Image (cartoon, rainbow, N blue to C red; front, side, top):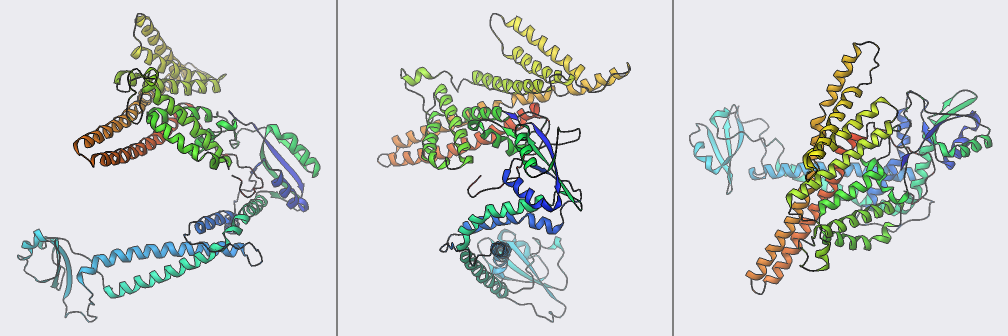
Length: 601
C-alpha cells in the first residue's frame, strides 16, 4: 500500500558487449530504462519500435473476422512482418472504402428522387438548372414565382422542383434554399457503389485468408514485443567508440540483484538516489487481493513518485459508493450469481483475478447495503420476517439518507486531507490539509449535530472552523519571511487559499448523488413492480404474461442504469472530489524492461 522507493542505476561497459548486456538485462527484468539521448528517435527507429503495436492491432483485427480459416502451425512459409503489413493494409483499405461507400449511399439517396439525368456538355444556351426540394405546404408560394419551373418528382411530403434560369434565383424569391445535386449522374454513382462493394468483398476474402496465421501471430506476438523493446533499448544508450552507458530506475529492495548482475558481466555500476529535477516513474505495491485498486488508479491518473498511493482507499470507497447507488440486495445477489458463473474463467489471468476480487468486494458491499435498507428487486421485506429485523435504514427517509450521504462525503474528504497532512508532515504546508480537515469536520458538526450537547458541539465546530481558517491563512504560502513586508504576501496567499471554502463545501454536497441515485433506482424498481401488478389484475388471462414481460424489461433497464451510474459516479467521486484533496502531482507508470511470455498480462 505504498509507492516503491526507486534508485537510479548507471551501468557502464564495453561497447562490444552492449548487445549481450541488454539481452541479459531484459531477461533479468525489473528496470525502467531512462533515455540518455536528447534528439529522440528517427522516423525509421520510431516505425521499428511500433512493430509490436502493429502486430497486436493485426491480431485483433483478424480475430474479429467472422469466418476463420484452418490454422497453420508450420512456420516454414510464415512471414511475420509480411502478414502484419498485409493485414493492416487491408484494414486501412476497408475502412477507407467503407467511408466512401457510406458517403455514396447517402449521395444516391439524396439525388435518387431527381432521376438519372446528365447535364448537356454545351449547356442550355446560357440557361442553367436549379434544384429545389419544396415541402407540400410551401408549394403555393411556388406559383407566385415568376420563373420557368417543373415538378419532376413528388412524394407525400415534398415536391422536387427544377427551375430553368440563367442565374440562380434570389433566395428571397424562393420558398426554400437550393439543393446541390452535382454533375455526376445517378447511374455513374451506382456503378461506383457497385465497384466499391466488389472491392470490399475481395478485401474481406483476403482478410479471411489471412486468418490462417492467427495461431502463429499469437505465438510470435510476445517475441515481437521483446525484440522491439530490445531494439528500442539500444537506441536509449549513450555510446562512444569503446564504451556504452545506460541508466535505469530500479526498486531499492532489488539492488543486490543488480549488483550481482553488474559483477557477473564486468560492468561499472553507480547507484544514486533521485536528485532534484528527476521525475522517477511510479511503481505501486499492494497486496494482490487489493491490487485491482492500482488498475482503477492508473485508469485516471497515476500519482507522482513523491506522492502517496491511493489504491486501497479508492478500492474500498468505490465498492461503498457503488453499493449505495445500486441500493438493492436482489440486484446484488443476481450479479453474484453471474460472478459465480465466471469465477473460474476470471481466474485464468492476473487481470482477471484482480477484477474478480474487486467485483466480489463490491457486490458483497452492495448485498450488505441492500439488506440494511431492505430492498429486494424493489420490494421490501415482509413484516416480522428475519429480513425485516436486518433493515436498519429507510431509503425513503430523505432527511436521514441525506445526512448519511453528507457524512460519507465528509469522511471521504477528511480522509483525503488527513493522508495529505501525514504525507507532508514535517513541512509548513502540512498545516494546510489539517486546516481543511478541521473546516470540513467543523462545518458538519455545526450543521448536523443535535441532542442534549448540541450547543457545546456546535461551539466546538465553530472553534474547528476558526482554527482551520487560521491555518489556511498562515501556512498556505511557501514564501520565506525575511522582512516584515513579506508577511503581507503570506496573508494574501492565505486569503487566496480561503477562496477554496466554497469548493470544499461544494465537493461535500456532491456526495448527495449517492442518495439521489440510490433513491432513483429504488423508486424505478418499485414503479415497475406496481405497473406489473396493475396489468396482472386489469388484464385477465394474458395479464400474467404481460406483467412478467414488464418486470423483466423494467428491471433489466433499471439494472443497466444502476450499474452505469454506480460505475461512473463511483469513480467520479474518487477522481474528482477525493483526488482534488489528496493527489497533488501526476506521475507516469513504471514500465519494466523485461521479457514477455505468451499469455502473460
